Amino acid sequence: MLREAIPKFRNTVATEVITLISITISRSLSTCYAVFMFAHAKTHRYGSE
Image (tube, rainbow, N blue to C red; front, side, top):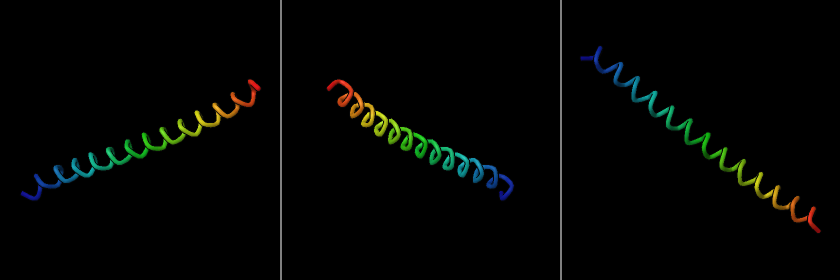
């Protein structure tokens, strides 16, 4: 019973970690994108005037 439970537990932990990492990456990417777009819009506005 214990031998069967360990791989299942490992798979669950791996899935949780992968999900957490992907959420963190997508959040940081969207933050970087928002900052980039904000800076890009600012430089464009000053450049056109």
